[in-house]
Image (tube, rainbow, N blue to C red; front, side):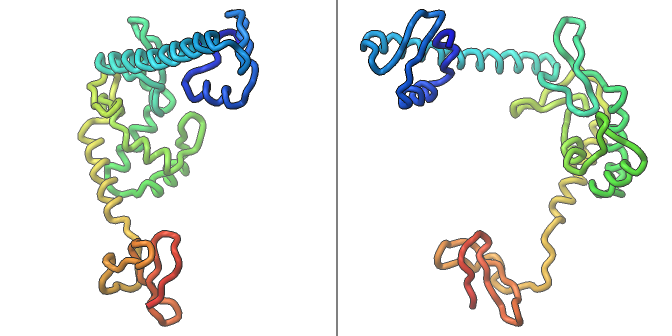
Length: 236
């Protein structure tokens, strides 16, 4: 290994190598560290490990700081989502602009879903049948659902728990995006498991062994209460 700060990034790495009882050769520092090294040598090496850890933490802090400053300036500080692409901006910073091959697909997704006539799955099936794609791939429900939830297509974006006003070109209106969120929320609330029977004390009966809620079901003409999690079957 070249030097200490290239070998370790945290104290855990140091402890792991120490437990392995290996001999470490640090070429650029012209040093060999092992269990047989002098206590003073191991002491200095330990200090270098802490310095390396501090360097790593400082780099992470500065990276987050830089990304946050970029977000405050209205520039999306990450890889462009579907519908956009990264380019060099006029001030040398990386920005996002509409992807000519995908932006219209994202706009179409929001427009059709916002009309309230499709589920996500039905929308995906319809657009795939019409030949729509993103980055050369067919649409799938998971990706489309993620797209429909992202605020970034309105011109604003969420970053590290905060919403920022972006300087990039929006692909949908804020009103359309809000309408889509309401539809998605409503569908999520209505998506409940269908049951054939309604049982008294539903949601209140608990297992005397583990305390988990029991779910009622009819098996071979008998009522059974089964723990929701993987516990032994309880029959009443």
